[in-house]
Image (cartoon, rainbow, N blue to C red; front, side, top):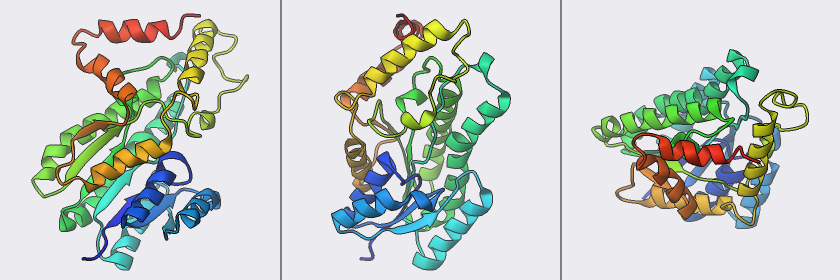
Amino acid sequence: MTSPVLLITGTSSGIGLESAVAAARHGFRVVATMRDLDKAEPLRAAAGEAGVDLDLQRLDVTDERSVADCIGYIREAYGRLDALLNNAGAGHVGTIELETIDDVRSVMEVNFFGVVSLTRAALPLLRESRGRVVTVSSVGGVVGQPFNEAYCAAKFAVEGFMESLTPVAATVGVRVTVVEPGAVSTEFVANVGLDANHPAYGTPYEPAFSAYLARTAGAFDPSVAQAPEGVAGVILGVLDAEQPPARIQTSENAVRFAGIKLSDLDGSHVQAVTAHWMQG
């Protein structure tokens, strides 16, 4: 049989990089994409070390032309697409009084509309192959978190979109899964851009913000946080499963954290937990 074709977004580092290498090692023909191919060297090095070949392509999920070109390339080069892994995303820390609406729109463009755009474009090929859509969300798509209003709003939107799409896609043979990591030791947090110039400093929000940052730094410490290889292993299991779940958490910590929300009908438990994060 022809090896299945897998399209992955956001493969320059972290979960995307590890997933691309793991999937190629497992036998997928991987189209590994990123917005800036100048950042592809870590992926090339990892692929070389693993002894696998990847098809590296540029893709900006916020650019409709780029999305269409990528899907067109896959149809022309491979004639099929068996799975899409929506992984590209960007973190954002702040609070709405200190931000512009354009800041919020930018977060939504990358984390939500990029997922919607690529999923929409890929579905015709996925229907032909009776393939699957796997989307990396976050426990932040289940539990709203302090100073993450825009980011969590985008991930909540992803969760609602995919949960609604799942039964519809199933009628045409396409399986849909949302993957929910907790804290993962990647460059994701480092790329958020937290520094002494953050607009929260020097405002009434500074004490709560500083306490939140201290708590978050501890949660993402490599000795505590899940390694990206672990998330990639869960994703590979979903891609390989005959009957993949509609939602899966990637660690015991993520299971426990998501469980807070799923058993909290009036919201009081979630508020008690997250308020504690802002206490020095």
